[in-house]
Image (cartoon, rainbow, N blue to C red):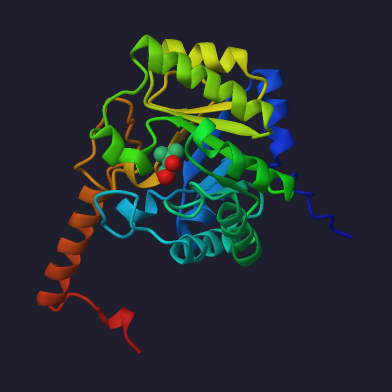
Length: 271
Ligand code: KIV
């Protein structure tokens, strides 16, 4: 009898174990079934259904417009594709700030309606009560500090955060607070590598960096950026592993030529 090899699912405990062993954690975003299937099968540990879907899937300038219903739609498509990775879903802007009851309701909807494994939200002390309430319901929470795109209109720009001493100190104390109240991991976005290193050493929970240097316990990129699906976004921290924009353009142009020249479909491609 053939035995199917058991897949060991990635849990929050596995991420903790990876940090303890000094093995880097890999995370990428995905927003749909087809890409999530590829990313999961390739062996990624964490898939983030990021609210960056607002930018790369819906074409909005910021992450603010995406709704809870839309996040649940993306998340449930991803969950249907995934057999191994931990699926973390962003709580969208307006679904958790300022009211911990609303925060819990939003997190519960994501867990129930999408089947995801955890939620992520942005901020430190300002969202303490929301984080505590969600965790008290048994829902794992990932934190997110540094550049927090949902607050873009407060910051005014997407430049590197926490370069100054005061903001760096605040970030450190927010990170410690998030660990104390039970978050299982922390995204550090666009902060100096030295600060990310210090925070990563201070915390027992893993840090996942984006534009935060190599000393974080793991790395995350937006899938569409690292695959080169879009060409406009080129920050220093982005490494492009493919150039899908140009490859797809060439493929579409070839298809147009083939159809116009009555080369496609050929005799073999018809019934
Ligand atoms: O929404 C997102 O894609 C994110 C990552 C940049 C961490 O939050």
